Amino acid sequence: MQLVYRGYFSRDEIIAEIHQFFPFVEKPDDDHLMSFSDDDWPCKFIKNHMQTYTTPSLPREGIRYLHDELANLSAQGMRWLLPSLLRAVMLSEDALDTITTCLIADLGETENRMKSIQVRYGWLDENQRNCLESILEYLSEKHSHIVALAVSTLGEIQLQRESS
Image (cartoon, rainbow, N blue to C red; front, side, top):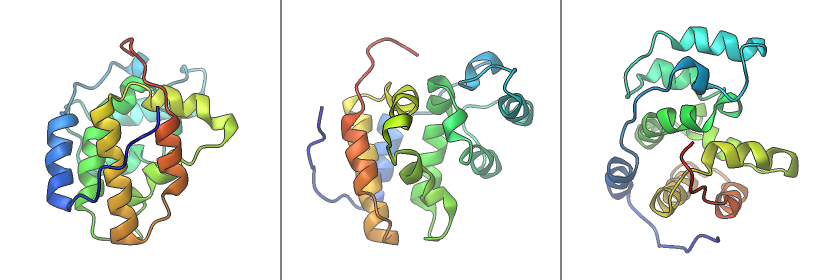
């Protein structure tokens, strides 16, 4: 399914959409936070570090820690992180803050990464995908980030009907 361009949205309009379409969700249990098992030592280390955070909303320190680990998150882990991450992205004024670029980089699809991307983002519904596209466009306008590949990848993500 290809995304349909909806026009430019202001920061306030996008934040309103984030509140509507990305409500905070409960943190998944440790066994469902990461894509890999505890046999994968980075995932074990990440799980241990993230035990500090137990609420649906993540503080900036937790967001900053996980934003470098997107490729290791499961779909449930991404569902928990994304509402906090998107709010942080939209509130950042610093174009060089890696929080503003992590989604762009994560969605920078290459053939060997598409399956992993599909796992993390396949649960998004159409409204969430449209909101995410608006965020990418905003980042392009506000911070001059190049988002074409990320938007293209977002359009290629197949919607998963089953709950992850």
